[in-house]
Amino acid sequence: MTAETPNSAAAASTPMDHDASETEKLLPLHHAAPSNSHPPPPSQAKKVGTALFYAVSSLGVIFANKIVLSTFKFPSVHTLALLQFTSTTLALKVASLLGYVNLLPVTWKGIKSILPLSTCYLLNILTGLSATQNLSLPMMVLLRRASILMTMLLEKYMLDSKPSKTVQLSVGLMLGGALVAALGDLSFNLIGYIVIFFNDLFTALNGVILKKTSEEYRKSKMTVLYLNSLLSATGVSLIILLLPGETDRVQSFPEWGNTGFLVYLVFASLMGSVLNLAIFLCTSTNSALTTTVVGCLKNVLTSYLGMFIGGDYIFSWLNFAGINLSIAGSLIYARATFRG
Figure (cartoon, rainbow, N blue to C red):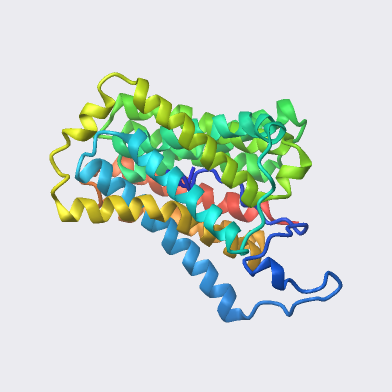
């Protein structure tokens, strides 16, 4: 839900960029060192370990979502999203009570401040899970790169920012590859293409709205994640109750007695909070460049391994060429974004 999409309540789109002003550390707050002390830099083993933890967690939640929704054909992305939102909310609350993270007090003013972001976050996760259900993983990863173009356009309009020529060219290469791959997509699913378009839009909006959210909440990333998950769990619960036949489809799902399905469902539900922890540790221990490169390599692995997971990818040379063209563009984009 990886919002990543990352397509889980982890994902996709959880705001976890590195921030030098970040005050939340995964250590008991009542044992915090004095503010004038400087902790030693993390060891190379810790840097590599947290980067691998992020990559493995991200791949795990993507593949678990795909197996639950496509292999077992679980009918309700809303229920899966609710389980992921709930696990993240509970995990953060317990961590706060134990003193491992610092959450700002929940107030009506805070809820109103974060509500636009949380609404976008919810829609981002739901469309991401729906895209996972309706598209093969290689095409989903490919088409999600359109969110970079949407982000560029929104930031130019709302924040008056302008990317470099290299970034613009790399985005063009990614989108060109996506177009070529779409022309050779033998498993074309119109619903999947529609929901991935809206997922790209909500991903872009999520990043732009975050930059316009109050400074107090932008500095407290765990509070943003907690409120996003809490409000999204409330919102998706209302959707489940109001959507005709939703509860009946879940209750009549024939695989509830299948141990394999239950294992994957629990794994997919819990991996949302694990992925958020992994992103936090990776961005806190490594540079933003390292995290971005790991994320890019993870998407490359997802594109290739996804051809064999889910059972819905149909090979064609045109599609395969487009996937590789888009991957090349994404690697250039990752390099260009952080040069200079």
